[in-house]
Length: 202
Image (cartoon, rainbow, N blue to C red; front, side, top):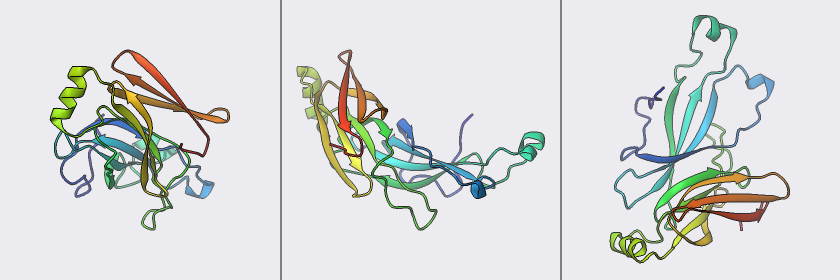
């Protein structure tokens, strides 16, 4: 099932996603159960060219399941089953974004517009440089210079927390226990484990 953008609600400059993460779900009170549910997505995209990667914040509007929707297929929201653009996050440390994973802590303050927050996230960069020549040198010489960065949504800052990775891509997180574990796969056939105290990005 392909999810369309709402009319006049798509990202500017085009939408060319390469990886995606679902924001940790927020608990809803019983009074909100009858309302439209919004699933917030963080999407690595290259809207302009292959040297300029960003993170697009996209909302998926999902009407809650009810007896009527199950029996008659009635949509409870005009926006149900559609996507809408929220914001674009950019940073000089997003040199060649590849994988992304959202985490629960350090979220932004709730928006005055819709009451939803933007989560913090970890992101892998395949290459350390945005320059095509520098990337060819990194790849040709086999110099592992990819990295892992953390975006602090509350402070709107980015910090590099992992270095010397060989073209990292996919990323996953686990918050069980007292430590956050971030696993990153790289093109040299390795999986790298990074551990951080919970609620502390570095």
